[in-house]
Image (cartoon, rainbow, N blue to C red; front, side, top):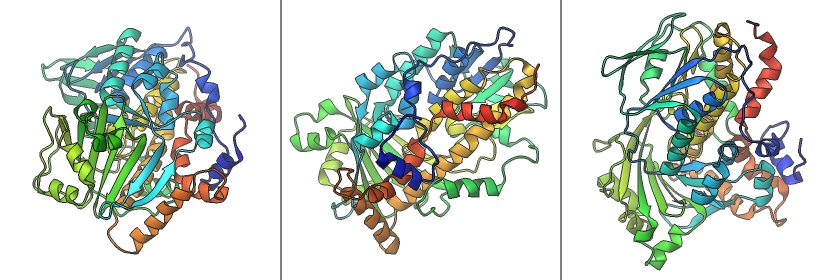
Length: 498
């Protein structure tokens, strides 16, 4: 293990980790998976959904020597607005891709701190400085990247690697049978078979619906799996059940406000800002050199005006609930939103997903299809990228098709519990950000105020800094490739030879 600072060791201990999984070794090498065994059967993977998860998986599987077909319903050059939060656990993976570091340098906006401002009083509650000492020990930084830039980068990378991508292809049916090749049926009536079917088709996944509609074996996850992971996922108080999270996001071009000094003060900040309020929170951050993104999230149920839609090239039109939410905000923020050129509204269900694979029918779900992590939080995209890297790494070791069930089970064991733990932490964060007046909010504000003094500069005891950082480190300090290798060292010997 590479040496790390006393502060980071203390934080890791506080977060109940036994060791820091440092990733410097990974950054020093490029992402070239072991060459396939010369007697290995190359598999045919069909990936439904050319999402961030789908494209990452496609590239990783091509590097592992497999044939890959991606089926995407959108046009090749469809509008891809919005921004992605790229936490250190995702940054470390992207940096191993060809031209990955250059992508982050050219289009990433490095986050220096996370600031919390009371939605009603406009008073700063707390500020978590992303301490250089800790980020150095992690080996990677926290970036904000335009969705379009990362998507185009991954799409081009896949195409250059030999993965096939078919755009404007709608899937209308999934056919699964025990020990039979999974089949997808397109809107034109074409049937496409695969050795393994991967569902990367988002929150309304048709592949997930087919998987969860199966009569799964008795070893499927039960309620205890969810309870165990939620207890491990965060040291924060866990939230009440959230069934829907309603959100809206808008994008502002920096050029539209560059002559307004007060708005540029917000737009040029390297900080990620939250404005928590009662049953809602607003967030805002710079995203690359040309974009500022504002999101608003409600947790008090659906309203009649709520919609779930793709990105639209039009300004955000405030409905009654929007207007009430922004009424208490910083007046500059409301003005900034008025310059939005595109908007996106979402209604996200939070289902419990018991499995992400079925070895008998050879199907896997990844990304938003597999995880209920809130899309307006830090780890929605990082889980998708982790899934893709892990899938490629696992199947770089397969030698014949009879081993497919073993490798599918491996993916479930590695990724499902990780997803549940992250989901628990993110939902706890949403709950804490939307408390109404009362003891719970007071306790939250007291903890957030602690952040302002926990700057790691020697003015505050390291134990205090560790207490503040513990929850963040539990999620940042994860490497998807190492997780696969650790699993293989422990359980790979159970794999049967061909």
